Length: 355
Image (cartoon, one colour):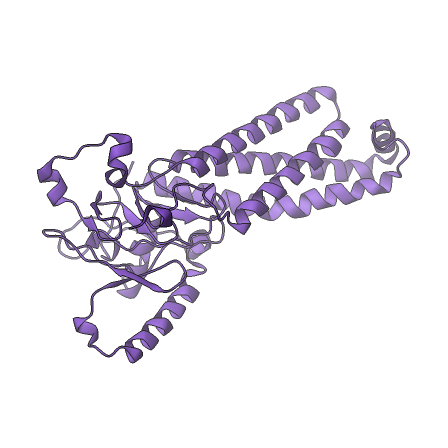
C-alpha cells in the first residue's frame, strides 16, 4: 500500500468541508458571545463565573480538538518502526492480517477506507475532525464533545436570560446596552439579532451533542466501540432477536450487549439504511456485470468513494472478512469503513463486558 495514499491525521489534506465549517461556526459563536453577550450580564459576580466557565470550555475544546485531529490512531503494527512496537512471532501469527496494510493487526483494529489504514480499537471516522477515532484519540474526542456541551449550554442559558431581560426589564437593559463600548449609539432593538442568532444556532448543537455524550457514556460503560455497537445491533435485527434488555446468545450463554431504544441511537443508524440500500444496489449491479461466479470471486472491500479496492484475504490461521457495513452518523460523520479483521464484526454475538 502506497504511503502517499494513507491519511496520517486529520490535518492531512484535503481538509473536510465539515471540518472547516466547524472552525468557522465555533469562532463566530465564541466571538459573538464574548463581545456582545458576556458584557451585558449582571451582576458582576455572575459575569465573572460565566466568563471563567465559558473560557475554560473553549480552551479545553480547542486543545482536545487539536489532539484528536493531529493524532495518528493507526494500529501500532503498521507503525511499528515509528513507535518501536515489537510483537513476537507466535503472537504475530495469531493476529488477523490486513492485506491493504500488509501487516498483522490487533483483533479490534479495523481498516478505515477513508484513511486507508487499520485503526486500533476503531470507533468511527469523524468528519468534524477529519480523522478516525480509535484507542489513541478516543479520550480527546470524548473531551471535545463534552466541552462543546458545556460551551453551548453557557451560550443558550445566557442568551435566554438576556432575551427575557430585554422584555422584562426594558429600561435597565437599555442602560446596560448603551454602556457597552460598541453600542453607545445603537438602538437596543439591534440586540435581538445576536441573541436570537446564538439561541437558534446553539440549541440544535446542544441537543445533538448531549445525545452524543450520553451515547458514548453508554458505550464506554459497556466497553464497546461505536463500530461494534452498530454491527451488534445490525446483526441482532437481521436475526429478529433484537431486545431492549439483555438476551442470551445462542450456544455460549453469554449476555449480549444491551442496545438503546431507537430514540437514543438513531444518530448512529439514521443514514445506515440509506447507505445499505445503495450498497446492495451497487453489489447487485456488480454481480450482474461480473463474468465469473460470485462464489469464486475474492471478498472485496469498498473504497471510500464506493469503488472496489484490493481484495481482503486472510493469512492462516485467522480469516478476516470484508465488512459490508460501517459506522455512520450525522454528528461525527463516519465516512470511513472498516474492511478487515476478525469475525466479531459480522457476528451477532458481539458483546461488551460491563465497565
